[in-house]
Amino acid sequence: MDEKVPRSKIIETEIPMGTVHPAALEPYRVRLFVEDEIVQEAEITIGVNHRGIERIMEGLPVEKANALTEKICGICSNAHIWNSCRTAEIGWDIEIPERAVYIRVIMGELERLHSHFLYLAHGCEVLAHETFSMRIFYMREIVMELLAMIGGNRVQYGCSVLGGVRPRCDLDDKRIQRIKDDLDKLEEELTNFAERFTADSILLSRVTGIGVIPQKQALKLAVTGPTLRATGVARDLRTTMFEYDNFDFNVITQPDGDVKSNLLMRALESFESIKIIRQAIANIPEGKVVNKAWDMFDTDIVESYIEVPRGTLYHSYALESGRVRHSVIRTPSMSNIGAMQYACIGDQITDAQLCIVQCDPCFTCSDRAIEIIRR
Amino acid sequence: MGIKSFSRARAIHVMLVYTGGCNGCDIEIVNSILSPRFDAEQYKVFLTWNPREADVLVVTGPVTHLNRKPLEKIYDAIPNPKLVVAAGSCALMGGVYKNCFADIPSEEIEGPVENIIPVDAKVPGCAVRPQDVLAGVVSLLPTLLDAD
Image (tube, rainbow over all chains, first blue to last red):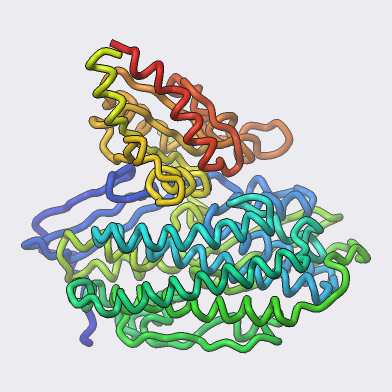
């Protein structure tokens, strides 16, 4: 595929959308520069959701700061608290019990399932295929109930704490049995859905070749996560994380980088997540779930990267007498914004929303550091 | 029940507006109205993104500085009678974002929602449970149906 070139010179019409717009669920602003209904350039502006979480984290005790990071995002909340705890654990050299690692992996993969289902449901809704959207929302409910059973809340479970997981999130035989049963049900429904989806020639012709991001361009734009893997690059941080050492799973890739590849990518990755959870509940070791024997000391800036449903998540802070200093958080959607702008180019204006949605945006996550100039 | 309230009860449109929370409440609200599990549509409650069509405005999030004007504009665009539900602890009191350390207020947050537009029902929770959202919307229905 040739490189698509944004044309910023001779542009006839500008179509602004947002910041609050009926087609977009989250407030953000996109300016589409259009010629003959073909988008020539797109520009996404964020910053409306800026709440200054890093500023609020500054100087908080690290346990409180961990709980606060969960409020960055309501979709991948577990990923944030997991990575924030992991940062402090790396800094203070805390050993995490094996059982806690397994429960964290189970929560992480359940969260990946619910995030991917949300993506598929939202994608089908933007495609105006409400039947599929409803079917996936129904499947997603199974995952949500499992998350609520383990964490006690449907969103923001607060599973990880410093040195392990909360005792509330421990898994007994009854819970493991329920996870097993529900996963069987989920896999069956997901298989049915995937067969139905790939057999639908109308839908496939609607999504093939829309919003293409070529591989070369994706690497240049530093795209992460499933959006990058949908362009054919097998790059997944889970292969390097020690939590996933004992698990056997494949890194899924798709060749094209268009909407079809992205949708299939999420569906196929959900099967891998189910596989990981099955392995985890089959081999979960006995023992305690939280290690309370650790010392506090001052550290330099500690960094931690993990793979979350949407890509690579980065947390870093320094610890000073048990308090957080110089916190930096970088979320996957931040690096995917370039891909969203790029995907719109060369497509019809009616597909612009679809091209943005295919990169799985979460602008709430991304609104980190901005400079507000008040006049 | 007069003919007006009879027909009004069969076309309640809920508009969700999102003012900078964490996305958790929003998805739960969309879930509670749209998804087949809770499905408020079977009670003739519909989700809309058009303020001129809406009857009930559900607001989530602590209202960040840049979201204040859009929220006011949306509120003004809704025809009377209109009702407002503030959903989630951010909308009720600013949540964890309200103060940046102890009780120093954060410059970014204009909320809670009460400071900007009048609120008729409050749904607590972080994140709100879909059942609570439905209860909040349903508790407002008598006011809406009896209005002129």
